Length: 365
Image: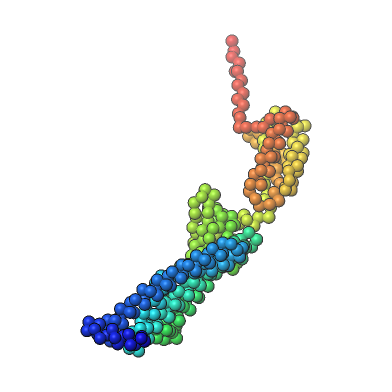
């Protein structure tokens, strides 16, 4: 028995001859059955394929198969439902207008689903690139991170235009209208656009990149994210600091990550009771201790001044690297060595003291 013969046989029953939108109840029932069956099969097939692909990707060293799995996981349930409904409508006899509408809905759903897949795949590629380049080329990673928004915007713009064109909208006239309306929007959103262009300036000029430790005014932290409107830092105490991109460009930014060497100035004070011969030897002692450290370059050490309660010496040296922990380790070693050396030489460190001289006045008897 052919399909048409089955329908003719089924429609012999009176209640099955009842028509809805030009189709009998039996046709609508079969269409609903196809919808349910197709949705079940598509959902099951999608889950099984994703599960097997995920299992396969876990056994390989290639990371791109992980991206494919993540992309497939972005398959929306509503898309499967729309496709299943379209398959069900193939059993119905619909007017040309309704057929055109159903096809347009399916095409728009397909375009949106493709955009979702492309968005997830783009995010995976950018994330993979940033992880690979963050340590060796943070500037390139920062540029890709910021420009990823432009790529996503272009993707969704193309999808939106194709969807509108499929629905019969005159895209050429729409684009022209958006151009005129864009001027008004730009005037109304000057601050937002200012931050947007400031973001592009940061990306292209690269005064700092992701991972750099910067100081802006009295705030400091590591650059965590450079967004379209704001840049976010992670402070030493743990909280997140958020700056407007425009404010950052108008501020004086100190970038410690690009420090090639660190200039260190430190002072010590000894008591006024220190003999002159010992005072003359102190700069040489300090120089020997400083030069015994690694990753430093000694500059000078001098008897600087007569202080209120100490004879003050000033020493300058350079740490051949930007790392703050390395600088503190070196300074700690210098301080401990100086303490030991002065203890051996009998030289006392000064601390704020005052000496009060009392003179007994003579009285006439």
